[in-house]
View 1 (cartoon, rainbow, N blue to C red):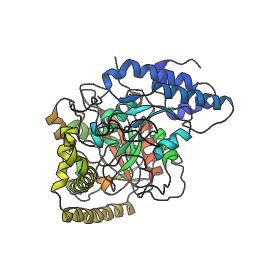
View 2: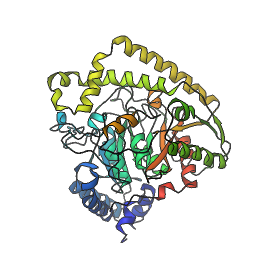
View 3: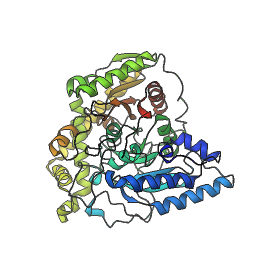
View 4: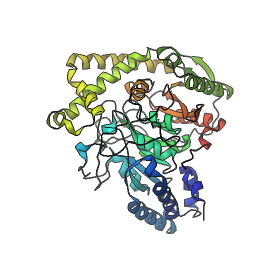
Length: 468
């Protein structure tokens, strides 16, 4: 099938799978179209740290040969993807966007990489991140920061910055990111795509450079909810080599998509974004409008009050800072100059924490988690903010520092709950807005059902940035 390159740029995984399996779209043609798009535009976006068109074309040719031979591997067969550059791909550098690891060659694939390769995916390259998945958009690292495709003068969100930018820009239909305090959901919100952090332990982290062992999650950024569910079907599963991995029965995460949401009980944690930290008026209005859309679809909506947002944030910050310092302690002593200034400052803060600080944080974490999970006796899903503000300018350090902490994502790293960021419109400056849907542990299928219903009732995912 001869297809318009712009059309292929925004082809979703589900649609691509149908075309490829039906031999109406060549995986090689698909890969070539996206390669051309990256070559034309990524010099202004900086989504890729290492672009691998030669690997992509080899993968695409292999996928096409298998299709022609009648062998179908599933929905990712012949579909391009990228990896945040903390995720190992055997034989390529895993740099974490840092001079510390600029010469670090991955000896083997990460677990998620293994699954994507076995599924016939087409690997397009390694994607920008904030250094070691923390910090912010830094200009003192070996590679430039990724920029927001909706306005390249603005921030992508992080730390999975390249994953958000590449997905929004039509370079990839799916990119792998990681999430320790919101690092999948932040770029998803600010770049206008869908970002999913599944329940803690559902997706293996083996082969992914850690930030904080007890908070880290790995997941996908896609342009639609249904594509996110397709990817989770592939990535979910127990891995004995990941100490945090938890065995769960197999589940089809797409199984509830398309069902209506009449009668579902939605608890809106409005105090997170209207009282505890007051959101930008446009973001607040967009979230409230999303609530009304869901109410109009037949959901039973009520406000839900839980512990103040600041308590969750303090717990996340203490645990993350302590665990990150433990990982980086030796390098910080031996080669602090190799870190960017923002990362170095954040990691050194861990040296000031005591064992009592860490233990008290973990005890409060257990209390907050239990209290939050009890709420699902009376609701099916919760809804709240993701980012409290649209993307600020990328070169405004003060604005980045101010807005980075204005978020409601980290509570669900503390609780380990599945949480998904969904697009909710645009600001008056044309920058994406979004919100979060949260479920009880291992209720991802229900989360996708609600997100897909909202997505079908709104036009936001059909709008794309103009790259020029």
